[in-house]
Length: 58
Figure 1 (spheres, rainbow, N blue to C red):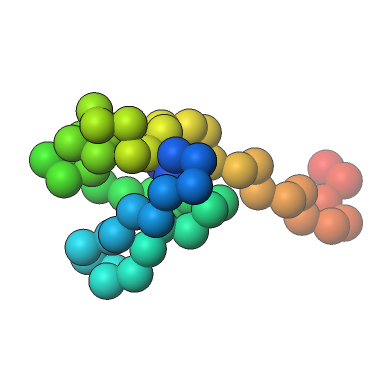
Figure 2: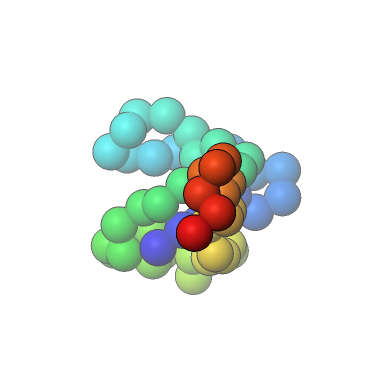
C-alpha cells in the first residue's frame, strides 16, 4: 500500500530505519502499517503517476 505521513508527523519506518518521506512510499500491508493507518499517523493514497516516457508516440 502507498502511504504518506499525516500532516506535521514524522513516522518511523522500521524496515528502512528512517522516517517516511513527505511524498510517501510503498509499504507492506502488515500489522505495523495498519496500526499507523488506524491511529491516523499515515494516510493511504495512490502513488504518484510515473512520468510518461519521452518519444513513445505509439
